[in-house]
Length: 158
Image (cartoon, rainbow, N blue to C red; front, side):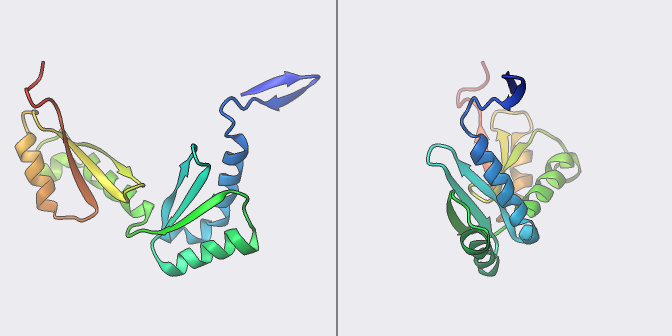
């Protein structure tokens, strides 16, 4: 959003995040050669801390070199090694959630990639009519990249 000021347009920064966002974009560009190892960046607005997640120590070292020496950032940055790339988790999510009738025989699973835990979270309503089938299908995958979360009232639907 922009606001007209004295004949020119200035960006309107309601949240105070514009300069941080711009720097995160610059960093994303700098780290693009490491995309295959990218566990996704996490931004904590409260502490103004960017967490850079990579799947190998070598990729983390390259990221450190880029952001601390070659093209330093003024942001507070943490570097964390994770098991899975964001791309791998996103592809897994798409494959399983979009095609759940193929591998479960039914549908009713929702989910998302949780980059902070570096897992695909699959959610099932424990009171849903197909809950047992869905839970068993997810458990049968025996995939360490997946976390199952159950939701719903313990006393049934209202």
